[in-house]
Amino acid sequence: MLERISVHRSTIGCVIPCYNEEESIAGVLEGLLHQTRVPDVIHVVVNNTTDATVAIASQYAGPHQVVTDLGEQFTEVFIHDIGKNPDKKVGALNYGYALVEGYDYLLGVDGDTIADERAVEYLETEAVGDSRIGGISAIYTIDDRPIKGLIGKFLIAGQRTQFAAFNLQNLLRGRNMAVLGGQFSIFSTAALRDVMRANHQSTPWVKDSEVEDSLLSLQIKSAGYLTKISPYARASVGGMTTLKGYDAQQVKWTYGAIELMWPGQRGDTKGQPFHPNLRLRWFENFGMLTNLFVRVAFLTLLAASLSINAFVFSPWWLIPPLVATLLNLRVALTMKYVNQRDILFSALVFPAEIFMWIRIGHFLRSWSSFLSRKKVDNWAAQAKAERGGGVSLGHWVPMILLVITAIAMAFIWSLLDPVVQSSILWVGWPIVGV
Image 1 (cartoon, rainbow, N blue to C red):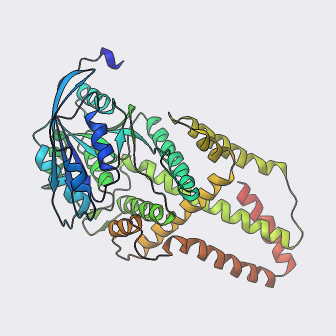
Image 2 (cartoon, rainbow, N blue to C red; image 1 turned 180 degrees about the vertical axis):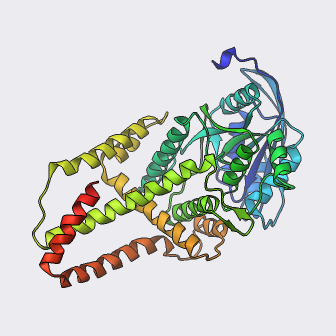
Image 3 (spheres, rainbow, N blue to C red; image 1 turned 180 degrees about the horizontal axis):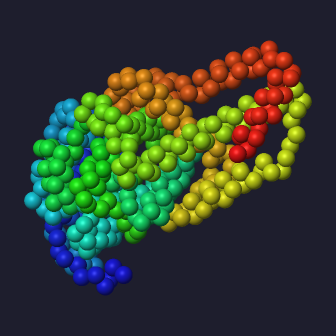
């Protein structure tokens, strides 16, 4: 299909916001310089760095002439160290936008994302072919080959499945992308200008939200443009290899999404509960609430039944975990680079179940933080967790509270009359079954 579309030579300015990316920035730049469609200019915007990111990236600074399947191409790499920046990634993105606003498209790339060699070509071809498109995201996954350690491999396997499910949901919904992730997405600069005009902003990205890419995606959609996911372009993003880092990232993402979903307004962020791009977010949150209720209710009723010798096993109970396993396998098999670890993660039940409990913990932490109205800098918390700074047990709090609650419920249960206990079980099991 792509070969039949005439390719218009548009102009693409690439912006790479960086923090501490000394381990990955060389691979990111190598990946961009080996694209079949090389961006016309590449700006690496480094902010608040404390490592050798600038020194390593500077080795690629200057003009580059490359020959690809599309012919001879020219690009130039610029490195900008903007020093201490209170707006963090948002500030770096807006700094980069000011450098490329005269181009047709802005390609946003994270400092740890490496794309397949035809990713930019695919994104540009589709964007040029439909002027209604305001932004297109690549299909994301995580390269698990360099990962070491049991915990790291387990978390990456779970995140690969999580990305695959998210990609599949968006692809099956007419390729309408709920979030144009900053990892590897192309934006029409005309759409960005319309967004700024419509929202009275001086820059495309604003620091009002914990999830700057989600907010911009909503604004692009509200401005009348399409937000799409490419069926062809693929990119490998950085994953979290520690429980603390993964928890901080997921809490930031979920908290930011709740802010956008919730009716009313907090600060400068106005909730948009009925925005079409947030339907998937509502579905995800109701899904997590259901997962929490079913698991807690089942374990509670099971323990209660065993305590009074009222437990009777039914083979029908095997159907839900069997269906869940088959669904997990289906999601895993949609990955282009599926491997044995992905299959085992889905097929063995317990790895996926443990990972679900971890995600439930993030869900509870995010909602409790939001409802408490406690102001937390989740950007700083994630950065601190990623570099391993400090000692924090925050990611264990939901599980600790569940254990304490279980002990309290067991004590209360022991005080109840046998007739009351039987009545609770008689009512409870059908509810869980439904």
